[in-house]
Image (tube, rainbow, N blue to C red; front, side, top):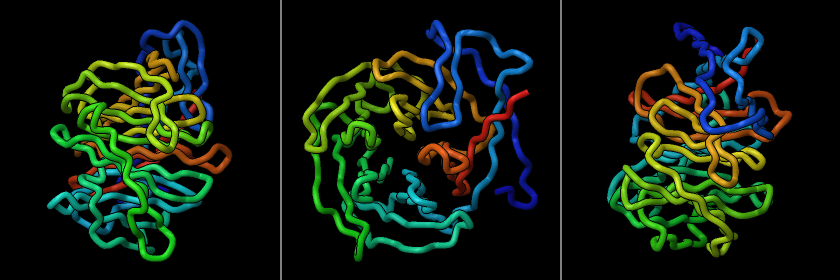
Length: 268
């Protein structure tokens, strides 16, 4: 939804890195292939969805069933999560919860619970499970400190598990660990520094990794399929994907000021 006074930004995709063949990002409106951008290839528009009506330190972002969940670091190891509709109207707000920076949020489709990563380059990685029904509360904490700091999380809804990002600090190198919901590691891949880690999501079997003004698309083995540069200003914060078939499917946040955008492909 375009807001008055803020223009739509279009961008032709950046060249694909390390991928020999076309790949479609299932569940998200992103295409990747080995060919250079052609006249009929996709570009992207980045449309403002809403300005976040709170000025706290915005961090993680999630989306489910027409609702946005935004995490805010309020200090002292606590975060606040707020639920908004597409107009930016506040629908619900948690009390301060011990979720650290609330660096990233993801929703488990089967029960609607929020999985919230602590984040921070010096903080051991933990994922807190928040029950959003009734008064929001942490019902379980999964300790991933053995993987490192700088934690991000995405629910792998296709396999009913998690994808956890961690490393020795915000400069990496990073490990991406696929786990079950108890935290048992199923598989991993490593990735070097792509920018300050700010968001993570799964779209089908594709990994979306949000760093400074860039969304990097990878497969489950860690092969980079695409890297999409976002021509906006501010600090990148939080990434979300809506299920396929429900309109715009990729959302991302910025702070300074706090706001949420949607990415859409444009075919020429």
